[in-house]
Each structure stands twice: as C-alpha cells, then as structure tokens.
Image (cartoon, rainbow, N blue to C red; front, side, top):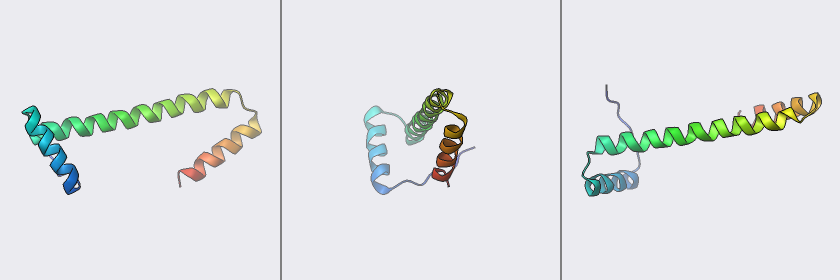
Length: 76
C-alpha cells in the first residue's frame, strides 16, 4: 500500500530530474532514496551504540550514571 510523502519543491524537482535521467519512475527513485536514508540513519545509531558501549565499559559506576543522565537530557 502506497503512502504520500511530502517533500520540498526543490527536493521534488531534484528527484524528478534524477529519475528521468536514470530512466526510472518517481516511485522507484523515492523508494530508493528513502530506503538509503533510513539505512544510513540506522547505521549511524548502531555506530553510536557500539561507541557508547565501548566507552561505558571503561567508566566507573558514577561516570556511567552521569553519562546516562547527559544522554537522557539530550534526547528530551
């Protein structure tokens, strides 16, 4: 089932131009672009989690609590 995705006019024109240039549909271009964006963000989050895991292994209990509090405040 398809969903409507709202983008800026500039992004729409860029996507339309590229889709035409590549000889693919706007739907295919949009699907690929969004999938790549989602995968990129997921990979960034995984890398952050790995890095934080490595850092937290080297911290004391108090330092871990402080780091968790800082991260919690950043997410709100």
